[in-house]
Length: 284
Image: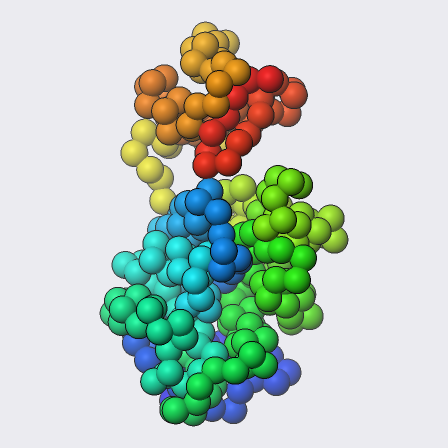
């Protein structure tokens, strides 16, 4: 019924006249951010997709994606409890890929699934771009994590721009073909994303009420602050030419993630820090 029709989708020039909905209808009424990307994602890409999705879910957003393998799957799994919406390319009884039927069943308790296709419709190649326009249309913005030059995720980003939605991209190594598309998006004007606050700050003016990230334990310092030189030196002392994970730096320093990330960013901007895949960092 109309009560379960996503409001931003209804505002499109060409909204689907009929939309099949399953799950918790209230999830479709909350502000949505879409997270899409490579089906053949790297371990670091999958980890970041889950982290970003969780943080957005904690802030009150519903994460919407396409139930595909890779980045979509990671984003859905991370937000099963906070609420996530899957947009299907086929009918509600023709789940693709079939191995994600259990994932879909799990997310329906607090989230939902939508499709403009009739029951029995088996998804074909041309149905996926149609699905992508619903993913972008229902959301405030689209975050692309790992996309090759000809990735379907770039179609979603293009449609988002045409629909007046925010387009975000997560940068990657120029040596990784999976980052070629996202790096190009940034060159073309997409907003660079390294954490959930990048997304939240960009969409904040569109929202009826302010949304902020939930404070994490031991991570309640303001973003703008001066780091004590002795504290900075304690972090630098843990770094060296051999890569170390951010989690290990936080654990061994005994400092909050906010302070550690701030110092690492300062080092990176000064050309003294290199970031590697999997959340590893090293001094240059």
